[in-house]
Length: 258
Image (cartoon, rainbow, N blue to C red; front, side, top):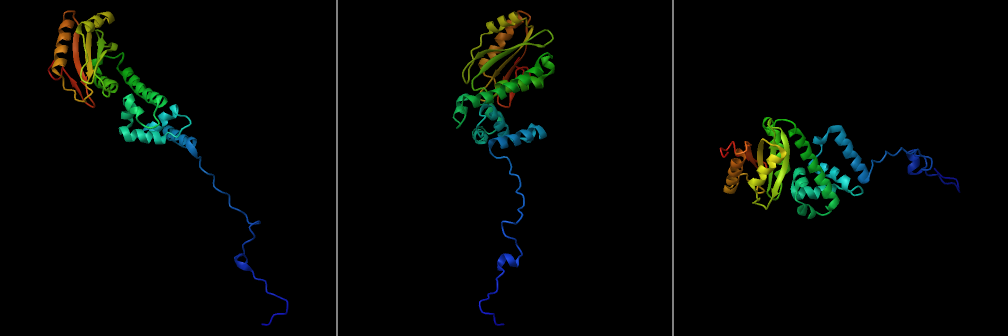
């Protein structure tokens, strides 16, 4: 069809064909709320997870993250936790690792080490509380759990004595000596003297082997016999000598060595 001169057909354009109103008049859909970002949002989610599902719902690195919140309040602690896991392999090994080894991990300094040590001390205190005020010989599994937590990951030998009353309740748990990686100087006379000071009528000797192998040495056997002989002259009973290894322990009494 011929068009009239000077007249042009108006082109509806793409928007017109789809009947889309100009951008200035279109109603825009509300944008979804963005999730909380940054360390604070992440920390909040971890706290909620802990309170909602309990500590068993958290991975080891997440427990380390939360522990380091206390030490590094303005730092993203997830990378620190990941580095600790890569170095030590588990929460327990990281918490109990020797200080020089902890300092070798990037970002782990005094504040972080103090937080890790706090967790270790808390665990030991809880286990110790379960041993106190009860006959020790009737709570053997709890005693081993406590001693393992306190000694299994020590990097030098430590000799301890558990002093008991006439009902085999714990009067005192004392470290008598610390030594090297494979030797601790023990003086039987000092052990007997301390028994008299605290009024103990029985005792349990304890020491650790940093190698992880609880097999007693000849020196361990001879020292035990000497303490037992000295105690017997005063009517004090040596119930046992326990050697704590890494994940294992040995009882002199069960092995027929006492």
